[in-house]
Length: 173
Image (cartoon, rainbow, N blue to C red; front, side):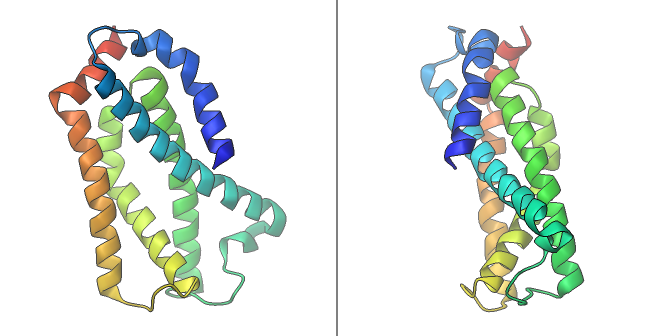
């Protein structure tokens, strides 16, 4: 997490200030909410991507499988979920940096949010089953999807109302 925070701060500090953070058209609160949202997205997904990448480096393709031999669904489904979440983690990390640095890609976030929600939900469900935090329960999976859906819904709502939209208008000029 510390690595992700350092990378985020170094990547965003100077370019974002040059692109839109010095704008007097935006309130400090809107700028702060925008940076908090992008930092949360970047830190969560970059940390997961980094852990999965190191696991792949150490264990090869076996890094996508669980060490405990416990599967949330079955071996091939868990593999597909892991690969999908690995790709989504890479994508969302880059998207969060693009949102933070250049104030671009608001529509791309909106369009890809359903895929991000599904991939993240299934991976979190798989993690809770493997770590024995929960038993296999479709109602729990629906709860995770609903929770992450509300989270991304609030993010998209912020970026589609006037104060959040203004970040992207200032970034264009």
